[in-house]
Length: 217
Image (cartoon, rainbow, N blue to C red):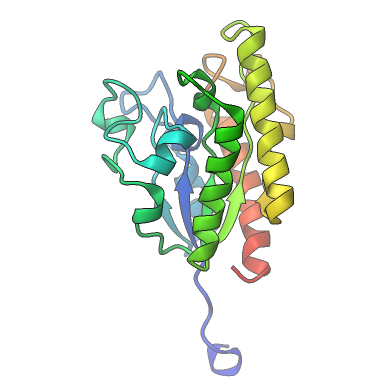
């Protein structure tokens, strides 16, 4: 086949995200689901190469600027890649770069929605400048029993910004925020998806990655 059409391209994906894309499971001794989203993607698409840079607690603010730890006192198993430099100084060899972080930004002291938007646009701009395709996911719902109206409103606004940036930059959006998702049935603690829900999110992301790859990523 390759003799006729040339060598087959390998799809390579870089994942940047917080505990949701990390596959955090508070009941697990490892802190992660038995099958993480990164592993789920490879399970569904054998042969793909996934660079998992996720870190529990990661914020867009810190992804842009670099961090020693994603949150104060974070144990090493929750950010296996260790400290990271500013996003625009790190190597990004994968064909597609995924951005999922954002939910933790609402709690950062001094959070500013306009700065968040500028940071998000900057991440996509860096990926594009390297010839990479970008994919965003949006934020999954969280429990109103844990977060108050102000925090929920901020998260809603963050989702709106991500949609607007994706539209303006013609970036594919996996639309995790509009999937059927019950905070009571689909999370372990009002925030983190169960294994089954995590798999559904990863499968939706995989479908979006398929589209990005077909478009030439």
